[in-house]
Image 1 (cartoon, rainbow, N blue to C red):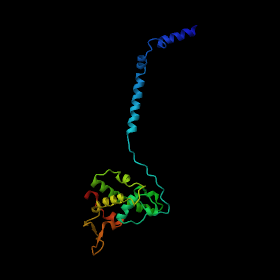
Image 2: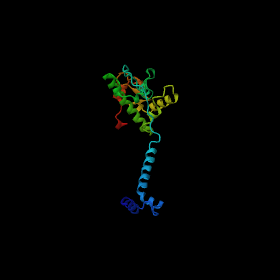
Image 3: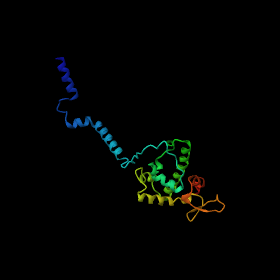
Image 4: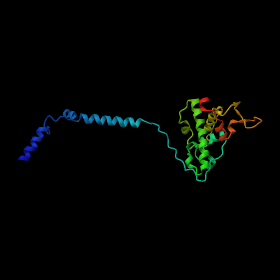
Length: 204
């Protein structure tokens, strides 16, 4: 009898099973929960709308242990930066890191080369107003040199940066290391020469 009375009392106190337990009453009781669920749903919707087109992960093979950093001319270096070493099945050099090379010499040479290419990239972006990730998006690890459209783009970009190397005349760099001041095309300069002859960024 006491158990029955206790149950009846509980029903009366909390309105369970009573006529006042209506849809409106239930809504009022759980109004706070509904609001929190709505906020959570909005957060999920917002997070799913961010990065609608996230950058594609470029999968590539690891750099072979025996691969050495090649001695590159300026324009060839730019080509390797965008297209890689196709003959050795090496990904675009913009995807590589110095730590991937096995020897200290190659690591050092790659860092110097990379600094030159980053300067080239920076100058192109400054002159064209293109987004910073333009080269990783347009020249992916899956591209090949036979992609004529991208080869043409690469050449057009390179033509924009000839003035970062010393003084140029008709697109040619006057080599002051030779007494005859023989003109030498920008693209034929070695990476080390370009690095030494680059005009400070504040003067460009």
